[in-house]
Amino acid sequence: MAGNNDLSTARGSSNDEFYTQYSDIEAEMNAYVEYDPDVFRGKTVLLPCDDPEWSNFTKYFAANFERFGLKKLISTSYAQSAGNKQLTLFEMESPLFDSTKHETRGKLFTLTRDKNGSGNVDTDDIKFSGYLEGDGDFRSDEVKALRDEADIVVTNPPFSLFREFINWLFEADKKFVIIGNLNAITYKEFFPFLRDNKVWIGSSIHSGDRAFYVPDDYPLNASGCGVDAEGRRFIRVKGVRWYTNLDFGQRHEMLLLDTMAHNLKFNKRLRKKLETTYGALEYPRFDNYDVIEVPFTECIPSDYDGVMAVPITFLDKYNPEQFEILEGSNRYGILNTWGKNEEIRAAHSHGNNINGKATYFRVHIRRKQNEEGGAN
Image 1 (spheres, rainbow, N blue to C red):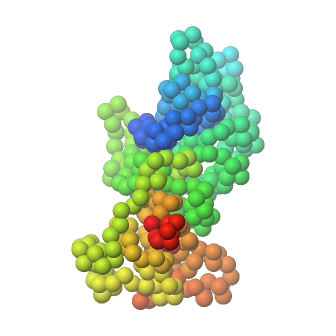
Image 2 (cartoon, rainbow, N blue to C red; image 1 turned 45 degrees about the vertical axis):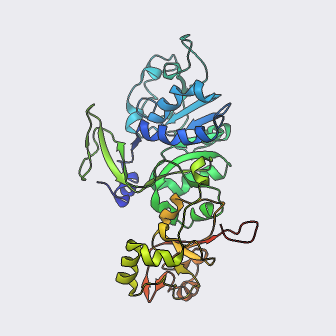
């Protein structure tokens, strides 16, 4: 089974192509539509670096064009992708087809109306709208112009370019739903967006792994790779999440908590962790922060009003009405000191340490106070 590092490495190489399953796209989009049936109504949706013949993003939104009430669907392909090299009927049957541009130019596909008179707007109505001047890289001026035209961007961007892609979205103040690595939470460039509730984890992937289809020449070296019943090659990848700034109902569900005393007395998982790692049945404190360590989200105490350090998987259950995110920290210290001069880093060299031992990245949170002055 491919791990986070395997996928990130592949994403930065010539094997930088992973195609999301239709069922995973459907499960995620359903959460937004259930919360707000008009979330896509009258909207232009952009699917950058998306090959209609290969990608399920185009197929999904084309199939749901009328149900969602979309105004326009735009897909762009990237010239260096395997999918882009395959001739599609959309391209071949278009009067704009040019074999000299096929392999070097990005392509533009649009969907706006019932083109073939079937009475429905669907995949058959996708129009090949021509070749881009460049190779279809999302950072190009022409794809930026399409981004600016769109209301919502949905895609599975290259993990190796995740930082650039998220900044590309925010510089244009776009709504979006994208897939990324769970460890993106720890990026100092990205975490502030999570902290400030400008982006959050999506609805449908909170644990386990997901299968991604890959080109026919992709090496299937890791466990969990294989070929499905239809002959499509796939790999299974751990630690992926949807990231979005579209709202959904699950995000506002209260996390049910128990008291600190009950957790310490009855939670066997917590007791084992504290006794084995810290040698005492109490929530440990960081060496140089007034913060308690909470090893598991389920063990956040309901009666503690101070600052707590929790694992990044807490964000799967994060309710902005129940908690506030204060900061993130790792072994170098509080996030806002990362990358600064050596003197500052040395002063925080005991960042996430407890009894001199470093912990992994932690999210610092505090329970919010309700109107009566008590904590939620």
